[in-house]
Image 1 (cartoon, rainbow, N blue to C red):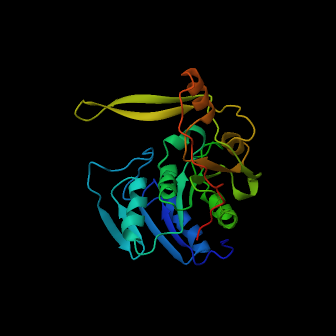
Image 2: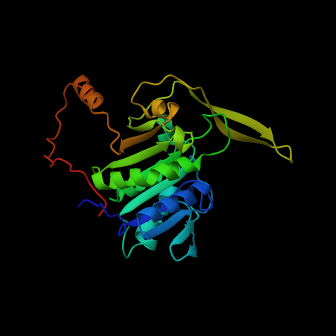
Image 3: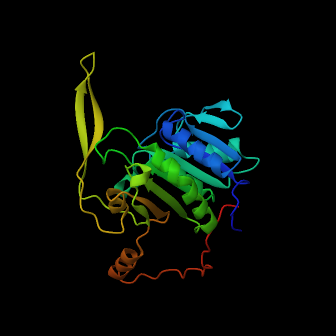
Length: 280
């Protein structure tokens, strides 16, 4: 059923930058513009680059800050699981919002991103999920323009909730590194591919003369194709990308089957066409 009025939605807010991150505070404000029932379950510490990992070898510890706000000593995926299976088990969330990440999650970034991973976990649990990120560094400044996400996100989220989207799909939203007045539009995009994305290993020496290392990325602005998330952000547009949980490349699977001599395959059961899914 369409949700033109979102006030009754139970919303889970999480992130990968940590419970004290400024982007989390912005997303809380946005969520409260949509609903009266907002819960926050986020990592105790920054978990950037944690991807879709779970803490299987270590116990999870949770700290209650307020009646609807908790910090988890674990990954973003841990946080969503703890929220759905423990904190909010009496009434699961209708919608998961992850972010707002400090920095874009576009192109190859989506495979590393804890912000995307939290939305993946929500999707796997059957909950419509959206990841939100605020790009920065493109305009040459160090300040993150949180006002851009805060200005545009409420209306975009309301429209997405009203439209709905299929199961096994999560929505990835990226806001460009410009002030709200300089945003040139909103575009539904596909995931791009960077021309260069090199991991830099920087060696340093600690106070005891032992080496330690920092990982970083060296990226060069490319000329990506139109229609990609990269191009949209480069041209100051808001990028909205539906990402599919099924990573199988069907064309290659068919080619490999043909190359292997056409091995007999079990006939797939006919599944009903997936209808757009909307928060309850």
